[in-house]
Amino acid sequence: MTSLSHDIKDKLKRLNVFEKIILVNVLVFLIGKLLGIFQRLPKNAALNWLELPRDVLDFLIMPWTIITYGFTHYRFIHLLFNCLILYFVARSLANLFPTKQSLNIYFLGIISGGLLFLAVYNILPDSITVDGGSLVGASAGVRAVLIFLCAYMPNREARFFMVSIKLWHIGVALVAFDLIGLVGINQGGNVAHIGGSILGYLYATQLQKGTDIGSSFGQFMDKIANLFKPKSTLKTVHKNKRGSYAGHNKAEFNEFNKQKKIDLILDKISKSGYDSLTKEEKEFLFKAGK
Image (cartoon, rainbow, N blue to C red; front, side, top):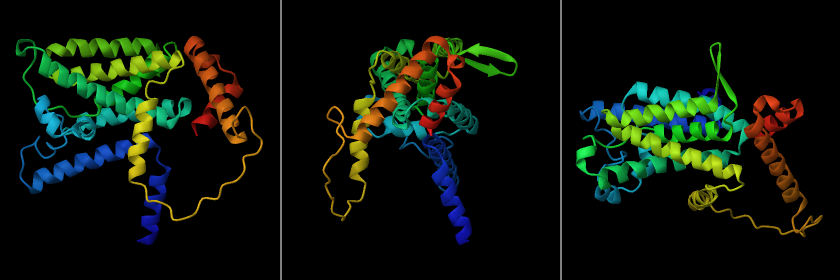
């Protein structure tokens, strides 16, 4: 039993951050199913305290739902589809971009999708909106990271069976399907998809210009996370900084150079595609992703 517990903990530690997000989605789905069975709740009511409500006044009472709705699924096929796309997209993100930056894109996509959902159903007249319930699902976050890749590396190709398709073609097709879906029964879900897509596109285009629009959000989330970290009782030993380089120590200077090299390689990918990289550049990106 101890050995099994150790193996499980070891495998959990080896998961990347998006695989952990997928695991959380699966666990929430299973908890919802169990609550529905044991409490004899309606099919789509077990997790209503995690859903993003349509009414903005209800949202103000439950502000956490702007994030938690992205971890809530009631249908297995909905969960499976989102998790599969996130798994494969996350593999590309992990090799090309810092983990914190990838998380910023994902969670800002969820928030953007939720905010657009609230805006549409609380500003637009009822005559042009379809009557529906609360918003659930990770689709807005998944759309954000997917459209981000399509916009940042538009000429990179993805292979489907024997056919190679450029990423920007995939991005345009997804947005077109979501726009068409605005007149369907899943209008709210497609509104959230568009919100996530807008965030992903803006993030990519601004990052190409050298601006990381998610940096402030990342710093805010770091402060929230630090509130839950146990304070260390060990005393900090301050050492004199040696080997100063332009006002930075050696480690900081090396990290700066590493990030600069990553940015140059990513810029090359966005202009000429992934296949234009040299073997050394590909190896460097792979190691940086690790």
